[in-house]
Amino acid sequence: MEPKRVADENSSRNVFLELDDIYQELLLDHYHRPRHRKRLFDPDIQAEAHNVFCGDKVTVQLKLQDGKLSQVGFEGQGCSISQASASMMMVLLKNNSLGQAIALSKLFRDMMQGKDLTEEELKRLGELKVLSEIRRYPIRIKCALLPWTALEDGVKHKILEKH
Ligand code: ZN
Image (tube, rainbow, N blue to C red):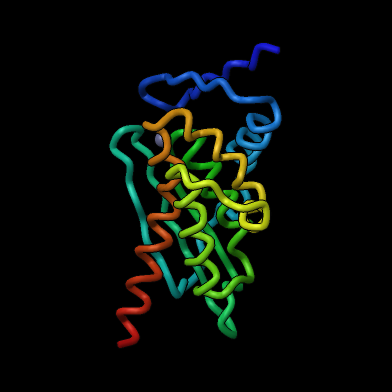
């Protein structure tokens, strides 16, 4: 079966992605109905990241309570991959500790950079595992990693602040 082509409307280069239906559906669902897309009041962690290639921008905000990410939010604009990745990331991170968030970030980065993960590791990434399909478009890997770059920056600053 011929995979459907998805026009990445918001990308300046109008890249077409040939993804299997299930991947496409999930990606576009998060793009059109982003989860946790909101501004938090008085966040403990805030960081943003840009990708000049697509004009993607993501701001991540996190609030901690009893060592857990009790509230998560993001704002942003750009291509469907960057925004869907941010939305999926928020769903995954909520109620995790900062340590767990960083471990998940490392796992996601490993996957996007071509490392083969175990079944168990893929399970931990939840819906984000569908983004492994993006590895076929090396130029878009940065888009998928963008919100994670913001997360890592934010956590790093938070840790530096403490010392
Ligand atoms: Zn992008």
